[in-house]
Length: 367
Image (cartoon, rainbow, N blue to C red; front, side):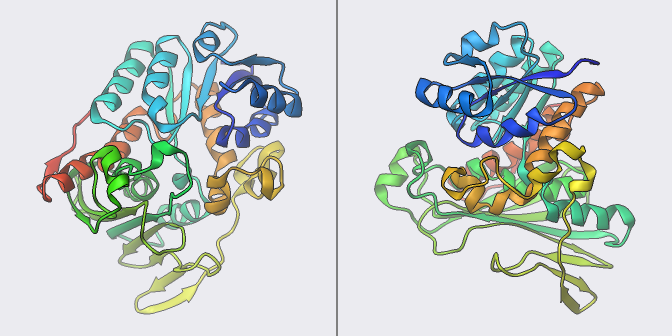
């Protein structure tokens, strides 16, 4: 593609964080917005000067001027809307998770293959400052040979929209899974997972999932590596943490225990705190500032996930840039549809293992 990519954002809670990023990207046109609530639709459209507005997703897909849709709707809509958009001839970026069933992940993969359009799961964890820093260490050879990986995402979801209540922890595990698999450059192959503790009965009844936490051991495909992932959503006392640890023979990286601290680097048995740099330099000048600020730059207007996640590590402009440039350069985005499905299904299959008492289960190979 040589013209600017005309983007439509669907869902304007978290989705509004991306509007000025696309508006200021040299290869994007922030063309349309879509929201069921017309009050919110017009308020946000007026605020950002966007004139093409839809309250119907189906009507949006009929607009021939839309090149790509960025889906930021509630989790239960992700699979259906991604499939519909791909089959309507639109490129798709979708917030996490890709879907909440293995079969729905398969449907998205098949829709992408049939349409030939791009699909990218917009996983913040593989574009944070911390991830880019460790990736730089890996690529330079400073880490050495990877030996083990560990990820955790613990978050109290009380007070969030009702569909979150009782959600199986591993159904939303991509923030903990993805940096590990991305740094290893491999896909997950086999998983064993155990549930631990109990959440309140009214929460457990929603999805039939009783566990307060789920912890998995994952064997990577075509690799000697294994990784450990822990996820919790309700009734565990813990400051929000979305973390990964990487252990290698020359150097290791450990996430800090408290948000106000700095992470640790180990060389042998010697450890030191390290200040993680910003990576705005990797971005076009017009969107660099969005690694450090939200769209409204006011706490009362920022989406809760942005505030709890400490701005998602400056990842938003990197995500939008990768999606747009994959279209401009006509190449698969990172993550592409296959990595997105594998990262998502790692958690989905882990939950199945936990519900069956921790039996080993193999992940599907969507390729």
